Structure formats: structure tokens, C-alpha cells
Length: 83
Image (cartoon, rainbow, N blue to C red; front, top):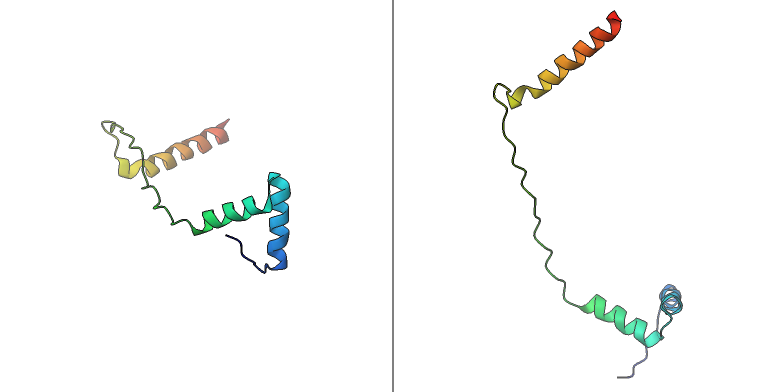
């Protein structure tokens, strides 16, 4: 089908750049761009998270791990001061 379009100046620059970069015809660039823009949107793939199984260590309370980290940090600081 043959038709006439009036394009904005910025669109013409983009079109000319695409023709140059792809080393193809203006017709091909316009048809590809229109196909891509007018194609129905595909549903995004569902988000998937890989599960990581870990075993709890006997005697370690996961709710108090920050407290343990603080104690270890305090011990390191004290050790450095005594050296």
C-alpha cells in the first residue's frame, strides 16, 4: 500500500539515522518500527525466585544474630586496643 506521511523533523532525523546505521531502506525501517510499536504487548513473564534451603544451627537464635555480630565487633575493638 502506498501512502503519504508528514513526519516531524526529529522523527526524520531518527529515521535517517536508523537507515544509515542498519544500512537498509527507509521502507524497511518504517515497517519494522510500526510492526514493533503496533504489536500487542506480551504479558510479562512471572517473577521467579530460586529457593535457598538452609539448615538452622542448633543453639543459634536467628532473631538474635545482630546481637551476636555486635558482640563480635565489640570483642575485636577491645582486642585491638589491648595490643
